[in-house]
Image (cartoon, rainbow, N blue to C red):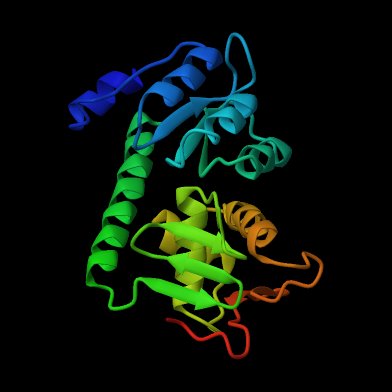
Length: 223
């Protein structure tokens, strides 16, 4: 059904896999722009599939699932998913979320072309806009698309406070609709990569009850 709808919406190159293992193998062999991943698969759990896929692709991964509990949602986002759509859903909602993902990627690509500064340096953290790469302590760190977009957005607005809802709208392109947990999970994943002390984060600071802000280290100028 989704394949038919996507074709009608202009997505002519749509591939399919019917088991988790088949999906993993396809991500090893092909470069995809986006992945729609069901959690309930006939062979292995979709969460396991997502973890394996993240070894081969940084493309956005959107979960489709009948599981509506917060634990399942946090699990999916925590292992590398970028969005979470619960069943039953309107196929047009799925298309809308896919369109948003691609619009955001296009916007960042345009911003990269127009940016005077391609590289942002903050102490031991380096963000390369043009290459969409994150470097920590001179080592490249894998950073899926939504994590990179969120980190870059915060870094481009230093010391500015954003609510979780505002971040969701800016990065995912939709009204938050109660999806603030998506933001908090992505913030946690970013912190694991850039913070030296997770208990006392220096870069991404949480103002309890208000939101988040990116704090550049003293003496760590952008370049």
